[in-house]
Image (spheres, rainbow, N blue to C red):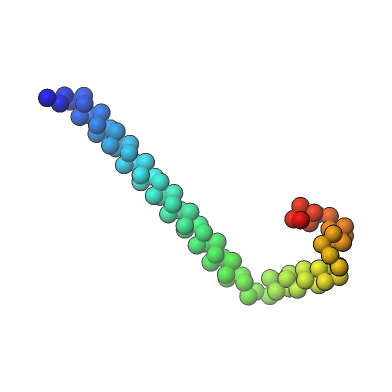
Amino acid sequence: MIGVETVSIVLASAGVLVALVYYASQLRHQTKLRQTDLIMRLESNWDSRELEKGVNELMSMVRKFKDWDEFKKEYPRWEKLG
């Protein structure tokens, strides 16, 4: 016959397993929620004047140079991108 100790060990193990599965599902849900939130925030700023101004400024800076190496010499902080 199965003793009380065995039943309690099985129940405790099952509880830990259920908690682990629940926690993993909550982590996945939080990750998807954060990704959705990021996309929504980016989308809300996508057609703002500030972003348009920044993109235009960057493009005018880039057009001054023949190639990436010339741009990096003028703006060394961008060195790590290329």
